[in-house]
Image 1 (cartoon, rainbow, N blue to C red):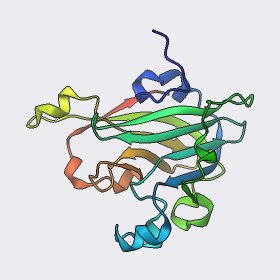
Image 2: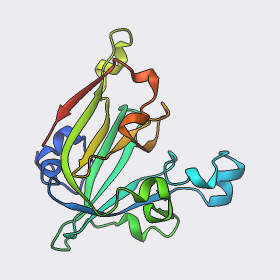
Image 3: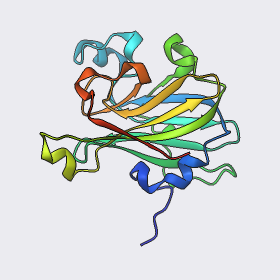
Length: 192
């Protein structure tokens, strides 16, 4: 069976795509929340400054050459899933996340904590896999908990499955912001 880059997939099945990110400039990140802003505050107790990194919807990463990749998480598989939203030549999936009228977009440029990653060139890409000596279910699942993008300026950003807060949802994390729960239980697998 041929895997399409447009289909959501494990990062380890998209290593060619991930390796191709090296040398590309990240120009935009959009977080699409599945619930309206007021509901985030009232029902989920999420503060506005945390809207961008909360675990309630997918991310799109836009590169200067036109490539757009998506990231979300799958709690059943304890993993991040990624896909190509648009190719450099404009070809795209049948359904585009950015055209979802029900999704509430939040832009990295509007959040000081996350805008620092914009206009940065990717230097390396690494898959972060969770392992455990005491919880065998983790070993039975893909458990690819994150994809670390390191940039030429020395900064790094992780598209994660709750690495920063041990949740079952898609979050952005910083390499130094991984929850202590994971200490000693992560394997870093360089892609490029």
